[in-house]
Image 1 (cartoon, one colour):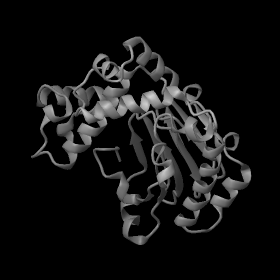
Image 2: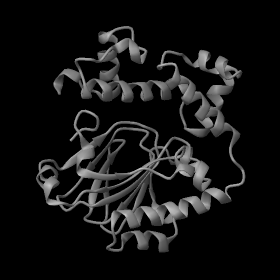
Image 3: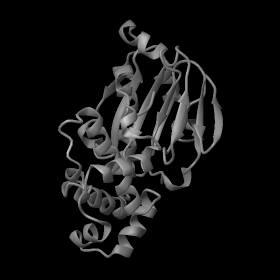
Image 4: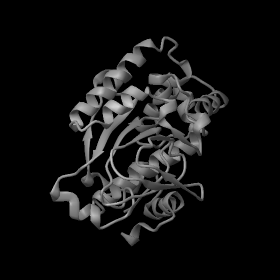
Length: 267
């Protein structure tokens, strides 16, 4: 199964974060275990995900699995929980008994909530015991409902967020830049975004590299690619490439190949 091209979401349960964390946490999710989706889960043994630069917790509630990252395959044990940045293509190979609870942060969200900068974890798989209290992880692993797991992790994140007194100025500027880029229909280049926020191109590059780990031009390209490709897959007939900052459909198709390594006509 391939992210965006195929509907990965149908085999997971999702929950949005509370209002206080909405700028920093994208969602909580867990593998759906009901019989109605079991046949779908049995049809594939891997999930390929494209770069997003979104730190993500993977808390294992089921069986061992493998992760492919930077041409290396990692074995994740049944009792092992990890943090990934997803700055590269990531493929997770799983068993039918797979059961994962995840917390997906927005870029920079890990630092805002837990005071942990995401740049040092580029291309790494981090043991979650180095990030979260052991007692919290064990509580989430207990045989409780998805809603109870969300409540446990969210209560902890809220508590730590209120204690992070040094709210990063760089992070605020980066979030404002991303908001400005999206508000323009992804039409603006880096210089124009910087101009809108009354900062220099040199400053915006420094802020993005400090908070996310890549220059704004690269991040905007990934963001546009993900949003546009999702819209195209969902409704090809009404998709208009210039609405997403592309010159025409051929420009979009070429960009999609560069981003995913796959032709959009394949699906």
